Every structure is written in structure tokens, then in C-alpha cells.
Image 1: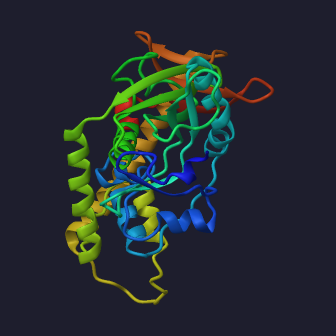
Image 2 (image 1 turned 180 degrees about the vertical axis):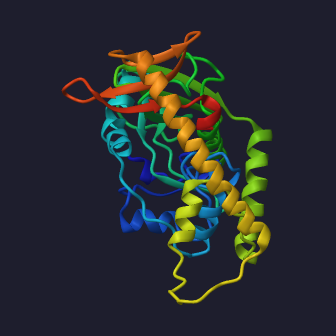
Length: 315
């Protein structure tokens, strides 16, 4: 039996279907004034990929910058099945099956597309049981700095915790397992338990956000890069005219430009010092903490020096 044969395979969720990511049907299932699990972190200002400002424009039907398929996203998609299979191998007696896209049975605007649903699988049986018990979320990461030690109950980055809390709240399940592959070889597992208080806060924030979309109340402009990209793509035409702006905004821009030039000079000097310390090495560390890593060209010279992201920055 497939999960589509019993649409109430989760206590509070209604299965909308199994859609190919990026397809028209997939977009339709996630469209409109709904909040998905991948969007809830943006609602509460914790997403490293999308600002509240950008999400508001998206939900208001306004232009946002087009999605760009990065190598990290591509390989995350390619490796999902392999990492999920590793979790399956480590947990005999449980079946992790593709989950599909769901909505909450009562709150139709609450949507989620978990990676896998976990079902109890008695030995020798291959039919998917009618009731899912838990969720499995699969992640890949180039570095493990934002993840805690394997099995750490607090080791999951906050934006991913928001994501799975929303998924559990949508489907009515109480536990999510994470299977995470870091640097292509470091496999870790984590577990997040459902928290009604956290879920209620997310629901309240989502309801307020959707009310703001309905009311045309735009969030303030923040410093996120995707906020700037969203402003850039607004179809404002082009009029060759002067526009008077508030003196405070003009001063803020000019001061930021001056500070950026100073900061750029200081950053160049600091990068040179760190790179000089690294020499032919790979990483710069201090007191056991990784600061930056060097990528070398085939001839051994440096292609780039990149900072390690801290858990606070990633969240």
C-alpha cells in the first residue's frame, strides 16, 4: 500500500500529493497565502537564505530574485537518497519512505514537505503501515561548525529546528530524526522532540505575518542581501528624474559607504595577515577554533580565503 492510498497517514496532516520539486504541481501545492516549513524560519527572522522582507514580497505576488541552483543545493539533492539510506541501514525495523507534501487538517495555510516519514516495519513485512510515527530530515553541509557533536540534543541549527517543528505541528507527529552528512564523509544523527510551546509561537508568528500580507503592511528593509536583491527586481520602470529623499537616509547611506571603504581596507589587511600565517596550510585556527580556510589553485597559490561561519551567524 502506498501512502497516497490513505490520505490521513499522519494524525493532523492531509497528504496533498507527491510532487517533483520545481514542477508546476509542486509550485501549486506551495503557492498562495500559505506558510511552508522551509519558510517559517524566514517568518521569524532566522533563515540564512531568505529575509522576512523577501518572503512578504513573494507571498504578496510581487517580484523576487529568481532562485539560483548552487552546487551546494544540487549536491544536497543528489545525495539525499544516499544519506537517507544510511539512516535506514542504521535503524532496522523502521522504514523511511518519501513523505510528499502535506497541509494541516484544519489550518489549510500550514504546509510542509518533510524528506521522509518513518513507519514501524515488522521483520519480513514490506507493506507501508497506515500510520507514520516520526519524521526524518536529511541534510548535507560542507562544514560541521554550525552542527553540534553527533547525537547532541541541542546540536541542530535553530533555523532547521524551526523547520522540523513546523513539519511536526503540521502532521501531528512528535519526533524528528536528522541524518546529516558533513564534508562528504562525516555522518551524524540528531533528534528533535516536538515542543507545543515552540510550535504555538511559530503558528502565532505565521498568522501575524499572513495578516500583514493581507493588509499590505510591508516589513522594514533590513541588511540581508536577498532583501536588497528583492528591491532591485521591483518593476519600477525607469524615469530619468531626480528624487528627493530624507536627509537622514542620505546621511546613513554616505556614512555606510565611508565605513565600508574603511572596513574593506582593514579586511584586506587582515586577510593578508591570516593568509601569511597559513602559508601552505589549509586552515587557520586559534585556541582550537577554526577561523578561516584556504582554497589553493593547482599550482599551489591561493585561490581564495574563506571565513568559517559560526553557529550564531548561520542561525
